[in-house]
Image (cartoon, rainbow, N blue to C red):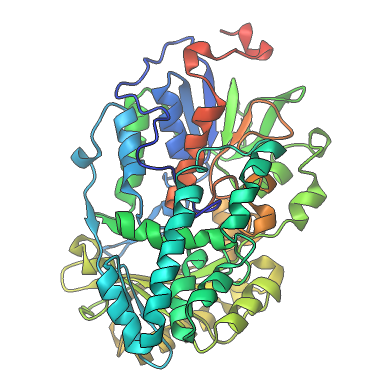
Length: 529
């Protein structure tokens, strides 16, 4: 979610919204998509619907990338994203394939969107009802209610520009950035999220409530451009939803669309190299040695990993090894998946537990790369909405803690269990009493896992950090600056992280590539056409 890293296109936009796909022919241009995360799957649907032959390749044995699923001891755990904030983006993909998403996936609204629990035990129920929000604010700071209303008006103004006008602009040229600069200045994009929130409200708890959203896409509220405050209006406009059966139901729905359009899924096949003909992508080489030729390549793999390890340095004049390594990357996550043999019915679907420190903790994570003893947590309890995620009488959870990426030097093989135990102790002392007595299954994902499983550069959870100097034109482009025929989708390119962001990055391809019948086949493929 968000601008530049959280932007999504407006619902009434007319880019490629045909109701019937273009038939795929045997001699249609071939697109290889690296990575079966949401960005890659959405790219594959769009390309296949426009008449391209599509092959999706992923190193994991199941699709979804960070949105894969873990099944263990009768429990089903969504591995990553769970907050669906712009359902129409998924509906559009189904429509492009000539189908109706409601036939395959059920989305249910979640209310409250989040329960935000402060370290002193008080809580704030955050939702899309403006009157309820004002009542919640008044519990803590009646004097901030008027400021909240002004803040929300500002959020709507930012939404109208950042969301409705800029989402599908690829920002491949400096002129694209120059055109939006006056509007961004007028909207105070030079401020940080926390800075803009603080202009309107004064109570420290209300400032936290209105500024935490960038953490959902890998950003520090004290560094991330205030354009991200559009998320407040976005959530009110479309709500927060949950996919019944878990986020994996969306993943498998998209795979079904791809295969229904004639596309091919190659799982358990790691890409080791993007092959080149001169300065043009010509396909991929797998770890097995197999080469898959292509007219174009879309990388949904981590953008830093793609440039650093899948392309030779001699072919890169913009994204050199030094530039890749010196870029700012998002924080990582420690994620604990666990199940209990009892229900915790008082726990909401989404709970954010804020620790005793806010800015100081974020400084430790983002600036000092220091693994602190304290933490703030996000707890997901899908059984609040969907009892199918756990055996009868049981609850499934995951809890994540933002932590530094691997530049911290933390040995996660040595520290994972002690950190998990600290998280367990905190949950048991707050909202999950007697947790240790009721645990029946457990597994963890650490920053090392983000590197090992997802090939995420430095083990970051959200790729390139969404600071102003790494946004829009200054972010890795959707069309590679270095390699012809190479395109990017996913968290590291425009518009960025979060489900709406990565799906929107695939939508940018519609502005960069023609329908398959009009595609000009590169010379290296003309002989094989």
